[in-house]
Image (cartoon, rainbow, N blue to C red):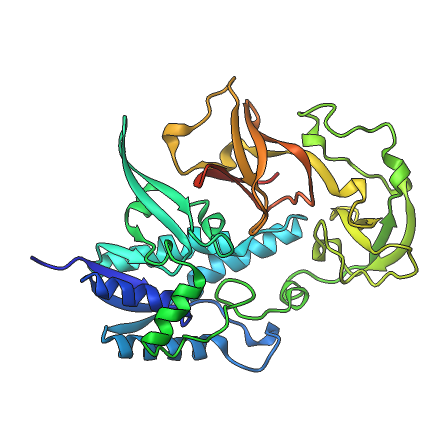
Length: 390
């Protein structure tokens, strides 16, 4: 009987290395493929060339495991689908999540199509998440389930995947703890066994974000305005769910000018560093930006009321269900657990579909809900869907 062919996205890290090893142990025909994505040395924080080092490590792992290996250059697709999108989002005053986009647009789209063209039955990655196939009233479907290691669970980064993509994907290490993965790598004497986890933008390396953005977004001096806490007296959050999802709109005269900045599009809600304004009793945090007027609004302390909202809205065309069969119909509500960023503990929330979009109302106000980021919702350990925060 012919072996099933799996093409593993070998990234040069320990997780994908062990994923390839486990698949070989399970008697798949395994091929390693390294993705060279967009890389611009002018904006990295060090003089090293991370993709070259990672590619070399991936090749050494493939050699050790006795599997074929090749590199594929996806720079053009990465620039078009990720980098250009990021510039556009920041210019519009939103904060995109490149890791979620990289999975949706590159690893599980461009890469998947290349793998299938090479005769693959599946692709596999080193993500800490799990997949389960089930029978439903509408046929076989895939459940996207959190990784067994709660500290490393990466299901959030996969929140935009479709049933077609999941059906062709394997997650060989999703049932393991990180320590177990490292132990396997040591036992196999893999060159990646002690390698640190990658940091920075997906496949770009350690990037200085302001330098990265200044390639296209020019510096432009504007005001930093501090909004006092007493501005919120009598403005109880949650009075109206559908009033811009309780997002306050600030005006120039609502606070006092405390400094200047070099472009509102360089800042994101919840940011503390980079403001260069001192002399306040508590640290200043960005509570909002206005890119049209080029104003950054700030408040003192991590508990400043301007940082908190109890609800958010996802536009109708930005709502994505991993499981269409569980979609909440208009007029009904669904209790879920949700998160608005990676590693955030899951929060109790309710999905409320309306004609203009999907509202997510949290039981407790959430800090730094940020436009352009993704909200993902779960029931138990299963990720049901996600959407771009408006």
